Structure formats: C-alpha cells, structure tokens
Image (tube, rainbow, N blue to C red; front, side, top):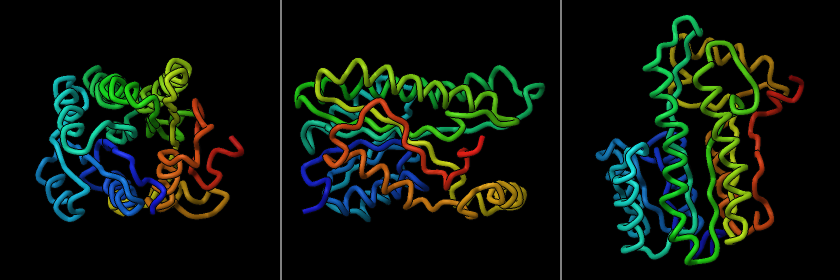
Length: 247
C-alpha cells in the first residue's frame, strides 16, 4: 500500500510541469487524483496516461463555478475529497515602475483568489470526512522580497498568510493547511535563454550550490498529503537548498 492509499485529491495547474509531477507521485502512492488545469487537452492527455485513478477537468481557479463543478464531479467519481493541492499560479516580474494595474490584478486573481476559492470549495467535502489536508504552493518569494517581484511577492505572502488563517479556522474539523515554498527549481522554463543565465546566478548563492528538482518539491507535497504529517498545520515548508538561510 502506498502512503496515499484511500486519499482523493484535486491538484490545480496539474497538466504539466511541477503540477504533473505531483499527479504522478500521488497516483504512485495510491491516491485518486482529479487533474485540473486551464489547458484541458494537456490535462486529458495526462489523465489517460495515469489510468483509472485519474480524471481531469478544465478549471480556471479564479472561477467559483468551475470549482463547484470540479468538486462535484470528483466526488461523484472518487468520493469525498480529502486532499487539495493549490498549485496553479502565475508570475509577472517587472520593476515597480513598469508594473501595471492589470499585471497586479492578474497575479492576485490566480495566485491569491484562486487559492481562496479552492479552499472554500473543498471545505464541505472535508468537513463531512472530519479530515483533510490543504497544501498551498507558495514560494520563497512568500517569505522574502526580491527585485522585480512586487506583485509576485505580494501574492505569495498573501498565500502564506491565508494558510495560517485557514489552519487556525479549520483545525477544529481535523483539516490541516500548510504552505510549500520552493526556491530555484529546474523546470523547462528555467533552462531557456536569459532565464537560464538568471537561474545560474541565483544558484551561486544557494548553499547546496544547485537548483532543486521538481521531484524534490513533490516529495514534500506527498508528505503533507499523507498521514505522516498528521500533526503539521499552519506551517511553511521550505524547499530551497538553503537559499534564504542567510537572508
């Protein structure tokens, strides 16, 4: 039996990248997973690859009707939801003087409102079960500041704060809420052009002297979804190779 046998999870932004890694690890550990993303074609392809323990839905995390649909259909297919991974996010990095109101609103629409709506949507299901684990993917940018990161820093700090507030609210129902804070992680985007040069510079200041791997973040998410973390709530779990240790 896997560590997540008997768990039913919704994972957002799950069609590719780090979200897809979470899906694969959850299913390998025995969970049933609803793969949700605005990229319906990619979500469908991943669900077909994963087999009978996966399904998919198109989900705009900033749309409460989409959330209602995803929760209802997941319950119909797999039963009550006891894990939510709020993984979907957007990052717009510009100096403050170049950052527009539209940039700021879009960042908060996905990174903050999307997390809020997700927690609200799964709450009735988790309350019925008298248990649950909500995992909000934040960032080291949710703990410190960075140049060009005004909107992203603000949204990820908001996720950190919402996580603590929700943990205080929901502990009485046996629902745990934690945040995960990745640092510099190897992704396809991080290997491209100017981004790769920027990442290489960042890595020089990381005590472990390398970027993290998506599977290293995903292992932390699996831990928080599992009963191994049964007394962990309202906390920040940092996966950054020591990046912010001396800040």
